Image (tube, rainbow, N blue to C red; front, top):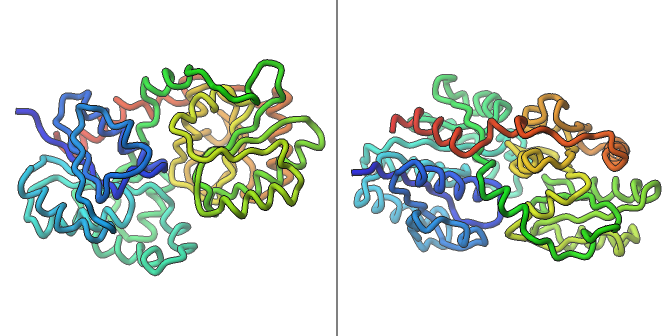
Length: 364
């Protein structure tokens, strides 16, 4: 009988961690495991991307906290050999469910962001309490997975976890489907032949992504080099960003199309991909751009970009929030001074390589 692996996350809204969990589910299924993808609430645009070989378990909870009884019941009835959770509040629920169910399941909680940064800037009490929760609950996990070395170092400093408890496993970003989807037809007039070069940003329209700095930098770029800017994603800062674009009189050259299920066809055809974040964990989209051979520019934020780009070997790094430095880097890329990276740059993030690391740590 095949071993059963379960993955738990609040939903499949359009974020990096959610996409990573879908990729992991696919990878474990391809390895021959029975795979359950457990969702506090089964909604979000990534639902359509879940492979048919993966069973979706909908706990139908209005909030992640309310999913605890359902997850306890699942562990008692389905008896998976391993459970992997993602996002801090879901990790706490997974740990509580293991203790309450008295399940022998091997539990790995994964951390996708730089905890000290995200908690310090959290607007909610729950967000500010995350460091306390990690110190209290994470020692009960069989393994704590950090998605980058920077995340691991920050996590151990904040949570006081023992070094042997924390393991670095990069996100499984590069799967065969990435390259297939990148070749799909892109029906957007700005990408037609002989059009102006397109600068691309991708991510949730939230404060940590700092798209304000990207838009300001682009306004400088446009004065020197005719170009256009597209930012893919949705979020609570949409209205503010749209107002900012109007205030800078950039409506004819900046577009915010919202969330798209296939950003890869945009990434592959962009003149340059730009990550303008204030902080990250391991930015998925930066790896995707590397894999697709698009020149990349990123802020040197904590943590992930410098690690991914090997200190600037595979792309250009600029200081966080430095509008002029970002503008100059974009101009360099548009003039061909930031070359595309070879495929080897994205090898550490290949799906099967990452699944193999999880299999080893979980003893499957």
